[in-house]
Image 1 (cartoon, helix red, strand yellow):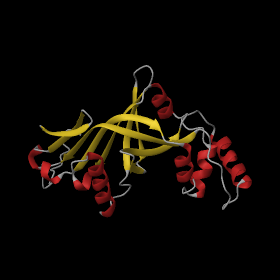
Image 2 (cartoon, rainbow, N blue to C red):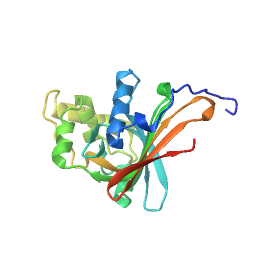
Image 3 (cartoon, rainbow, N blue to C red):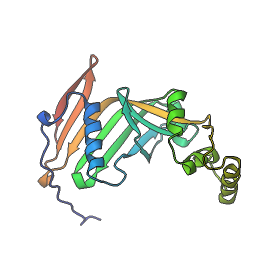
Length: 209
């Protein structure tokens, strides 16, 4: 592993290249990654911390950039849901290796309203809706029992049925407090621009690579 090297070839990033609103800049970079055909361009690594101060991280999907923040969906009684209940402080990373780009966000998470969650739930594929109902996410489970529950739900709700959203499932909105944009450059002279809030306004500064 010590001998693994990658030479970044990014063209560089100046403050003039970035929008004044970092949330909109995130949206722009995500759209550029999607338009470039990168696989799962909205995958982000979400970090949370539990009541004992133990951090954990996992990959989730960014599903919206709205209301001045970032939306993802999950089970509220999952491990990450329990963590957010204990501490709303979260962070996430978006990384696109072919573009030599990375975004890191720190902020606070809160539940979106049930209407927003239901509207999104209805757009999910049939199998994903069934899985959301059947899965006790993050809890110990027997595979045969889980598959039997899925089979039972498929009988109860044939494809095309209106599957009710589980009460323990929904969205979170991450309201950012700090956002960093990273652009890889040759010789490890990477560009890093940090946005932070002061008196309700976004300010920015360049950080050393």
